[in-house]
Amino acid sequence: MRYQELSHWLSTVDEPLTPRPALPGDTDADVVVVGAGYTGLWTAYYLARADPTLRIVVLEAEIAGYGASGRNGGWCSALFPTALPALARRHGREPALAMQRAMRDTVAEVGRVVAAEGIDCDWRHGGTVLLARTEVQLGRARTAVAEAREHGLDPDDLVLLDAAGAAARCAAEGVRGGTYTPHCAALHPAKLVRGLARAVCRLGVRLHERSPVTAIRPGAVVTPHGTVRAEVVVRATEAYTPALPGHRRTVAPVYSLMVVTAPLPARTWERIGLADRETFSDYRHLVVYGQRTADGRLAFGGRGAPYHFGSRVSPGYDREPRVFAALRRTLGELFPVLGPDVPVDDAWGGPLGVARDWSASVGLDRSTGLAWAGGYVGDGVGTSNLAGRTLADLVRGVESELTALPWVGHRSPRWEPEPLRWLAINAGLRVMSSADGVERRTGRPARRATALSPSWATDPSPSPPPPPAHTRR
Image (cartoon, rainbow, N blue to C red; front, side, top):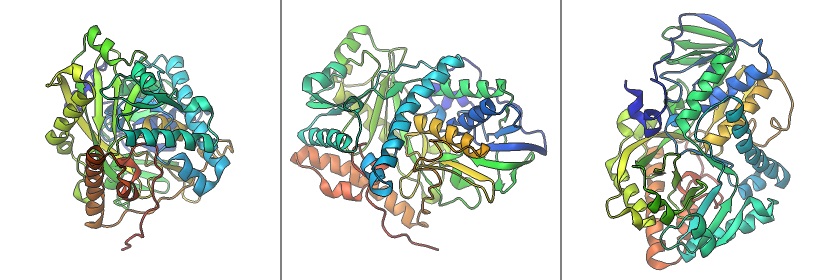
């Protein structure tokens, strides 16, 4: 497999992406981690830093960064999949605020490690601007700021922008206002994950690539090359989790796709803005996201690709011409200076993991030694670091502020069996797309769409609705 072809990010790392040696046979460890994406590598990193005597093995089916960690939008943000008001309803105001503050601090922590380990991942802590391009979207921006104040966030955590203030950061067509948060950094995601892989190997972690896991059970992980026996097993497989026995309905893999332009001239960037490499999106329902790369490109992505029956994941699903065309149209609508044919250099995609209640979680079952983290709903660049630090404390039996956060130990319900899962997820995607069209035509909020939508299909401000009753089997 030519791993460089999986994404623009993987094609522009300064290494050949040659797989590390596979697991050579049966072995013993203290901790075995399944998955060498951000979650698995952050967990191994903080464990090795905290206790260099631990024998840590990381197993990866392909190469480090093969999945979402090597293909995402490059937002290291304080966004958490469950909105602050929903967290407050479930857990109380103070636990919800503690969760949000932990996410805010996570952005700075990733920046600290990047500097300390010498990981050149084009890090730029420029924040995020969310644009409002209609009166309906501007209403959602005002609501987001009001809810942030009501639930105890500092005024600087989310700032309401007027039209001039929003355009000064990102001069998209028809901007009427928006919001700005400083708690996000733009980065090159593949450089980050590959740098993390090198860092954990320097710390003595054994990283075996091309070592697919066929079964996870208490005390052991099975691969075609041998079995790793360990007291603690960490599942860090996110969208690839349904391929593991017993986990078909743990998360749903939903695809997100991206395009990237050729490097743009300085005069074009003067028209667009993003001078501090702010990441950007807007307040539509169907999520879009973008960044200005360090080499002057626009990297832009969004949802809209179909969910595939049976939670299947396949390289053939990474490229959806209809979605790529829609992304190009949207980019051209946002920035007419790019011209009628947006100059796209590359296009790619990949799956992200969605839990049934749209809640990310992290935990360790001490009775079995099985640990997990995931369900990030596309917000995993930052959240995975918090998960890794939390797992390091849980595995070592350390009680801390992190292990007291409300997502620790949360168990999401299982997804419905097919065909209900396929029908529900794809219907949700269609509803979100049509809701944006309704709002453009009528100028009124598509309230029914919000009531039906899971949080992965909406903008970051609304709270996700309670899930419907589950179909059991």
